[in-house]
Image (cartoon, rainbow, N blue to C red; front, side, top):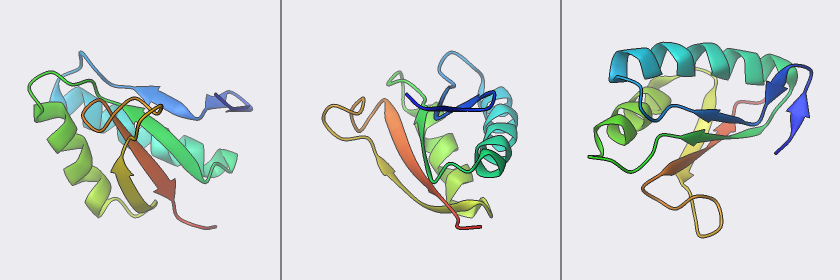
Length: 89
C-alpha cells in the first residue's frame, strides 16, 4: 500500500450500497488523481456481484479513468478487486 499525503492507493467499498459506493468512489478518484497516483485498487468484495458491476460501469465512464481491469492473483482476485489506471495529468 502506498500513501501520498492523506490519500492511500486503495479504497474499500464493500458493504456499501451502490449509491453510497458511487459517491465515495468519485470523491476518492479525484483525491487519488490530485495526489499523483497512476494506479489504485478498488475493493468491492465478491458478494452477489452487483457492487462490482456498478463500480465497473462507473469506471467505464469516469473522466479520470484511463482503464481498469479485474484484480489478478495476489491482487485480491477478479471478483473482489478492480485495478484502476488513472488518466495522465
